[in-house]
Length: 337
Image (cartoon, rainbow, N blue to C red; front, side, top):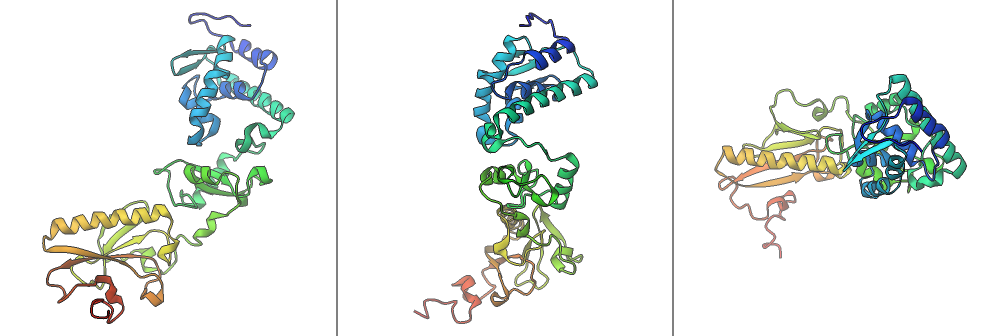
């Protein structure tokens, strides 16, 4: 056992010797922990270390924090490999060169893979390691093609972390190849896990449709507000003054094909524009909010859009029934009872 006290640090050779000769594994936690600390410059919080054990699986962070404290941190501290003060964990080794860091990481990877080879991938349950990790270049390609959005809900990195997901899970024989990878946010990926092999990239076939007036954006109209998912402009044939369209940036024909994140982005802009209009015009007493979904419902531009129509006391003789007026004779429902 290596005995170290105070500020005395291990040498590179001593750490290497411990990893290669004297580290006894009951799991891969110890080499993974050392490798993670080397990658983070030698210092990290327990929370950060827990995050490295499970990537973005938030539901398991507490479990891994407790696991770290009970086993690998405790064991490695007793060997003098780590030092811990509260939630801060430090690799108790003298400053390593780049070459030394690379060797320690390689040795840890070897010990992890040896353990996995002997015990089987089932040690990780659905969080199993893969001999073919997603390379940085492959991850970049997949993210670029996805426009930096979750294929299921449309979230961006500003909403939550984005993961590279295996469409056919690795546990079911899925390969780490381009055609089997898609972008899912941490929430959608955690929900999916390895339960199905749905290719969510097919939700939207085209991000941008050439010649679509809303994909290209009308250049003769002011953009009132926008966010990651949508923008708002005035209607070219307004029903009342202030009639506004809120339009998703991705090309969807049907409102019911829009992802949850994009629906939220649209309705955020509806609320923003409502406030803008009411602050500017005190005669506005109400609004109609409407969507034409499909030609039979009156949709003429086949890129989904939401109408926000300000209403004033004098704009129609009898407004009772509101949007029921899309069917002639059905607006005044009292008269047809």
